[in-house]
Length: 126
Image 1 (cartoon, helix red, strand yellow):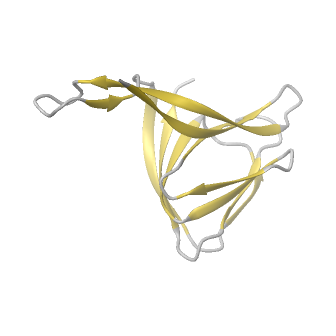
Image 2 (cartoon, rainbow, N blue to C red; image 1 turned 180 degrees about the vertical axis):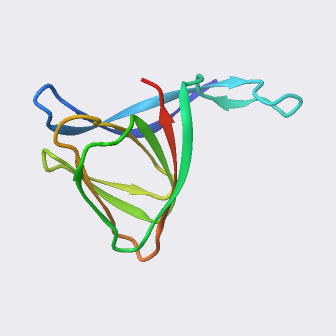
């Protein structure tokens, strides 16, 4: 049995313009934590650390590239993310966002919910 988890990805092209796309992380049945029952698990990715952040209501991160290749898991609240090409995506509670636009024109991020955005960000190795 397999399943997948959709992730919004933001990356830059050769001209430095940021663009969104979607990709799926494949999950396969694994004995991840014996003796607990098997569960669906992704392959292991390389990471160097993590941070937990709270972005207050109304917070705006003006256009900037991502400081690291990183994945954000939204725990509460909602973000509006605008790529440099003008496309907008919403990052809501329970969703994941891979920031791979580490060079170029970057993106803008804004908390649009009536509550802070709490998130866990995992810093990924290249």
